[in-house]
Length: 409
Image 1 (cartoon, rainbow, N blue to C red):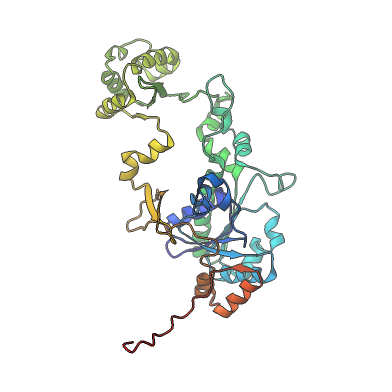
Image 2: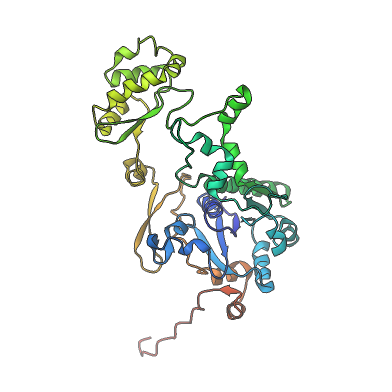
């Protein structure tokens, strides 16, 4: 996405995650937010850093911020001027809102026939669903993931992070990329629509396909896998949990040797994968007893040495502080642009050669003046007039440094 300019009109989580993903892929991303800012800038005041919430900071790195009232005709014209010089636009309004704001695909293509338009919606774009609100929890519920998440015999549980919003953001970034490529190839702007519900249904993959094939309903099994055994988590002597997945006969035998239970290899109940799945209750009882005799780190090391897929069940702090997170450069330290105080952020999962660490999330309107001057050729006087009218928020005009009157100057 190097050299591609994207206007990001999204807010909250899923859409901004898409914008940040595009920035991680190399795009120039301009966050166009209302003059009072993205509403989540101030959410969760107990977990904020210099006024911005952790929620906002997590999905807005690598962007410029232009604060703009697009409901005002003058503000809409400013947006159109940005559209004219951009490759793509992403937004997450309810299906009927873009047309009312005059930023639907037809309106945008009248300004820039080549621009790619990627839209994130909740459920569907036609009545009676078009105006139905859809939040992460409800989308998880409707999308089936809660039906297969939770302890066996227990109630449904939502995935611990906002998988509906975040998956929607990933699909939105992918759809935007595809629409940009199509526009570059054809010279004609294209439109992509992503539904949060569609994304959850798509992620059901083989669980849904098995249901289509067999008619059997997938159920909640806790951490256990329905067609692989052993594939589960087990409590260890220190109260922590071990996740282990010795998939394949070689790894099954290696696991049995590593845990000192070679007798299980020839046990008639466990000699094939099918038998291990059939007798998973008995196998689980045996393995729980085995793993309860040593702390998790000891088991992890033994199994790592035997090349068996296993690992401790980490907390969030464990996960981001583990050596692998450092080796994979998945934690960045970024200075605050005003104070210089460093804050840790999650790193870039895209490992492009020569890619740079993403910049700190932008302050509201921090780049309005520079973006409108650089991209739209607005003069400082025009920008000042827009600020005075309340259409935009921008940093004050830089005053020229007076020449020194000192004799040595």
